Length: 119
Image (tube, rainbow, N blue to C red; front, side):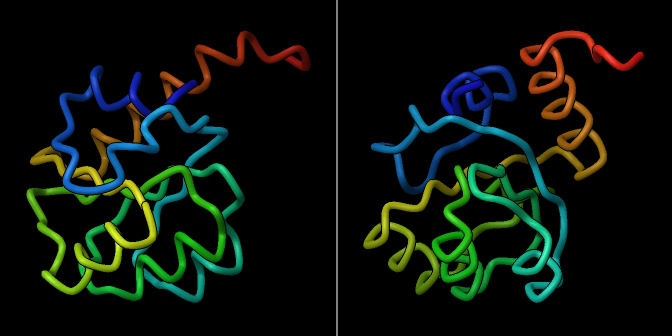
């Protein structure tokens, strides 16, 4: 699943990292506690959060996330947006609540992976 597919399907507003929308999304991670995201998210994850400060860019870069979705209409702080643009980190914004975004992203990714062979 590519990031641009998710952007189109969820009608996300891209505020940075347009040049990386072809990135492959391998999974997702939801969390607002940076230490938790650093410890448990994986490369290629799409991070869903309400955090808007510039430290989210450092974490997303460190973990090589596919991008960040800010929920409930949250807008990145000006310094966050500057840093994201410099580092090429895609940030997308939606007015949807986190629960809805998470479910829709999960269903899109799980649908592309096919049925669970262990089921």
